[in-house]
Amino acid sequence: MDDREGSFVAVRRISQGLERGTVYNPSSAEAVPSAAWLGRGLSCVCAQRRDSDANSTFDLTPAQEECLQSLQSRIDVAYDSTIPLHQEALRELWKLAFPEEELHGLISEQWKEMGWQGKDPSTDFRGGGFISLENLLYFARNFQKSFQDLLRKQVGDRSVWEYPFAVAGINLTFMLIQMLDLEAVKPRTIVGATFLKFLSENEYAFDLLYCIAFKLMDQQWLSMRASYMEFNTVMKSTRRQLERELMLEDIMHLEDLPSYALLTQQPL
Image: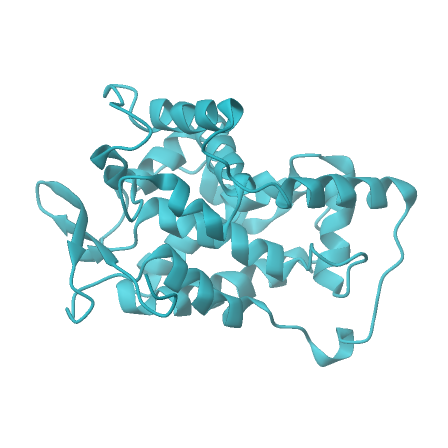
């Protein structure tokens, strides 16, 4: 397939529930871009740096440097469908997402129910690596109610055409890596340096921030009454809000972020 083209996956919301994984011709007006398209679009959205930070680096404590290197090691791990550990992680994700439904195989049409663009999720992980699967697993294990609400689009006045859950998750991982400048030897933004303080206190800070970001993104989606064509606009808004909250003076832990409350609040 030409890298500039791709299939389109749309998730349609109807009164009885969701029709997931419907594949449309790229010329269709009612289509959601594939994971590759979204990731490529977000690379432009997320690789933003303030001019004041462009030539800056922030010194790290030995503990922060060790935590950053550990997280970078996770980021560098590609998803490999031949590795048993990766296979088991994917099976666990299915069990957490659909405990009542038996998975027929790691390559199955069933995966479209979760919002993957095809029957083989491994093709989508090329944009986010194994850490994007780890992020989804952390979300499902630790915030099962919020995870299920977003997966099944159970909260709010939903769009007729919704964002694919799994594809959105991969793009959130990508967005956070870019926003926090995690591939640099030292942070070059204040937001990145601030995050490393949280990471040095909590080795799962990135995973927790991912959960917050996912719930915040969905809230932005609902408040903007967005549909598939506004996905990147919603991601931009989500990033700006996260940056603002991370810079608040009274934030001592990620749990202090205003948007953390979205993970535990009960729907109206």
